[in-house]
Amino acid sequence: MNSSQPSSNELFDVIIAGCGPTGAMLAAELRLHEVRVLLLEKETEPVSFVRIVGLHIRSLELMAMRGLLERLLPHGRQRPAAGFFAAIDKPAPPDLDTAHAYLLGIPQPVIVRLLEEHAIQLGAQIRRGNALAAFEQDDDGVTVELANGEKVRSRYLVGCDGARSTVRKLLGVGFPGEPSRADMLMGELEVGVPQEEIAAKVAEISQTHIRFWLRPFGNGIYSVLVPAAGVGDRAEPPTLDDFRQQLHAIAGTDFGVHSPRWLSRFGDATRLAEHYRVGRVLLAGDAAHIHPPIGGQGLNLGVQDAVNLGWKLAARIRGWATETLLDTYQAERHPVAESVLDNTRAQTELLSTEPGPRAVRRLLTELMDFDEVNRRLIEKITAIDIRYDFGDGPDLLGRRLRDIDVKQGRLYDRLHRGRGLLLDRTERLTTGGWSDRVDHLADPTADLDVPCVLLRPDGHVAWIGDDQQDLDDHLARWFGEPG
Image (tube, rainbow, N blue to C red; front, side):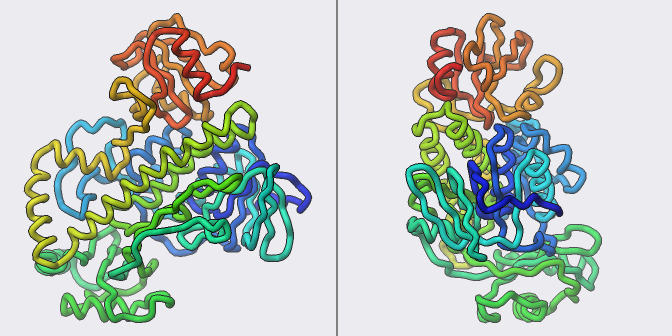
């Protein structure tokens, strides 16, 4: 992919270290507000292995808000929003509060490519083969030194450079948590025996080994998960022989696995950065939090970080936001990550073969037959349960608003530009001096049971009411002084 090559004396508003899903999404969000963005990626080429990941409901909603969902859908496979929590097989709850009640399984390289293309189309600059080596920040900005010795200047730096984040380490931010206790091998491989034989064997083994599966993707390709105990060196990538050895040890057969699409080894380390921001340097995605992949929340959590941070950082750079608004990034997203880490800890325990955890798993399996329990866990995994603390008010305050019917289409179609939105069923309110940042949709027919809502660019409800002065106060809180 061709990328623009900035000169070393060019000043950027934001430098982003890492061009994975989080970094690419953040770059695109910033470019919606004409922020000058440089993405640094240490790898010279995009990843070549094809790993299938799942976009959960909240991430699908965010993609719809930015007009990206239609680009993604042809490349993915939809399946019910069910069976996420500790791989307990329960049906999807009926009538989830969303227009996108499914999981989209999609190759990770496709997500990265489409988000990267989106960012470039909006004007972001990307430099591949350029690793961040050092940086210094001062009152006016950040000077970033690349591995080749070149220096680049920006007003802010965001580390989206993964679990071993160079930015986080150089910043000196603590990353407390628990080291890995149990490693797993995971990959996508072709098999050489009939599906019926695999299904029967997996059903038998799953009675005693919960941390084991072979799940079909179609066309003879299976997702394979097996314990890694005693196999290979953690510092070295796993091999096909490692998978065959472990499958034999547990199942008595290797199922004829061959032709791997990708192979990986991961642990259940769980860590959370103490701070998401130090001065002009911020962290997002795996640079800020890591956890076991159970429930498939990692990529989603990072993309959602990016959408929360993007408009706030852009607002600060454009001059209409105070430091207080930028501080809400950590105030809102740090507790969300804490919750994700806790639910992955709980799920990991439920995968244990010890008698106590297995008893708890059996009990929870029974409880999930109650719709309220099943629904609560699915809403947690898919991130549609999040309610930011915006103060006292109706339950909808601080929550995201689903994609409802509005005049001339759907609500999310009105959020493609990353601006705020006043949805006004009274037809008598105005955005006044904030009209350069907040759109106004007067629609008495909107499918909403409150008079009016003010939506932030991330789709969360910042105000509910029908009084102009009260609205103006909240417009000032979230969108600065009127222009």
